[in-house]
Image (tube, rainbow, N blue to C red):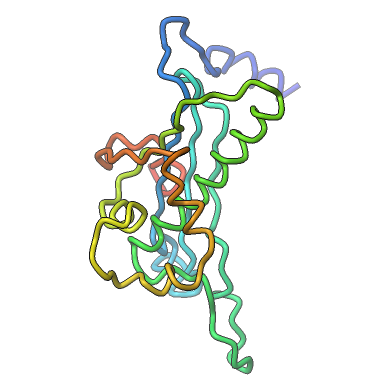
Amino acid sequence: KHAFRWLKGVKEDCLVKYMDNHEGEQWWSDADYSSLYNITKGMEKRSRSGILGEYDGMAYHWSSKFQQCRGTMHDPEDNAEPRDLATSAAESETYAAADTAKEVMHYRHLRKEMKKGSRKKSSIHMDASAAMGFILNTGTVSRMKHIDMRSSWIDQLRSLDEIDYVKVPGNTNKADPFTKILT
């Protein structure tokens, strides 16, 4: 009974596809570096990735999740080094872009299997200049060289024949609400 009352009240809030929108496939990526660190008094150190996938302006994929890491599950008795814990905002944004690239490639392969593939590149919009420089490999030796040497997913992330990276201002990044605690 309560669910139907709620549905009646929000029936105007829905996914909308406007007929005059022909932007194609667009992806949005954002990260929040250790966003819950202060709130949890240092107990939660993981960063959060936010992803939004749109086709002609209509959202069809979205996610908000902690970045995969062992850093918060590190046992002091274990001598193993914690891996994949973002140590900077740029690194966190790079991990988020990698998560987005994985989703982009998943949907591209899915469309290819259905014979609905597109020859157009997919675009990932992000607001982090340092992560863009690392992905596009435009900088000199960076402080994130350890990612480059250790991780094989960088090759997929740098697959520029299938993915374009677009720099957008932070306040226009549509994936921003998936990473922040907003009022």
